[in-house]
Length: 343
Image 1 (cartoon, rainbow, N blue to C red):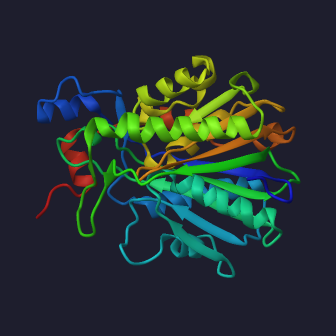
Image 2 (image 1 turned 30 degrees about the horizontal axis):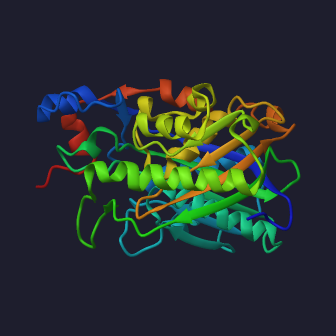
Image 3 (image 1 turned 90 degrees about the vertical axis):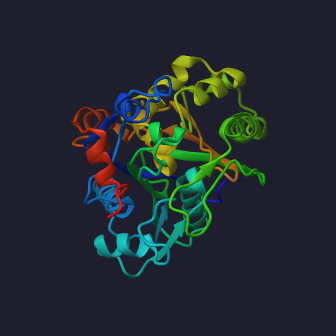
């Protein structure tokens, strides 16, 4: 899929909560030594949710983009604060935008890239000048489940516009989906469920490899054509394994890896990795972004960095700064913050 008009990223912003829970403390509570696949994870505070984090990320993106007119605001999340009430309208109101198309996307961990693709289509067709795609999620691991070690919190937002004063051009995108029940949550259930090892080979790896292979084939590209590749990061191992099978070098993937540091931010995972790459990327460098969402599917997007990025990054809050600004908490505070204690 290639837009009729040239489209690019005009600005981006992220939000990572300060609170960090070491995974060794989860093991201490549940006697789960050996399941600590990452060092720690970011967790939203007691007064934070996917909506408040989305607003923070969006405001930072708009500051970089320097745009006021938004035609659409799309929010991708699987941890929305209301079961029946859109998150996007709350975000729009907080940003002072009412004459705007607002919608929520809920395709698990690829809801953010799905929102981005739809904004690309609206801008590329000339229906709107600028749109805002947001990915935001909070930790949702069931106590003593493998997900509790990785499920974290974070948000990221991208302003998509016609290719003028942009920091990166979006060259091509495609999607690949199947009905694979690797991870789900029924209506009324508090925590999602998964099929353990089934989430690896037939779910994450199959869709990531297929989407990547298809976009390389359709654009007549090869792994060496890219300076960076960013995959969805349910854990630190899967993206490296996918890259290895596809012929990418580890050096192409390391910059976009955030899971060992802050865990799996669900819909924001791959897009936060992209933000970390854009924090240091140079003009003419090319980036391949591949998300994954359970249920299941992957979105692949090819980007080329443009000359205006250095000027736009001045005063921008970098991902590395947010990672370093941390407050360590123990399991009891984590349980209180995330409502795991029922009274």
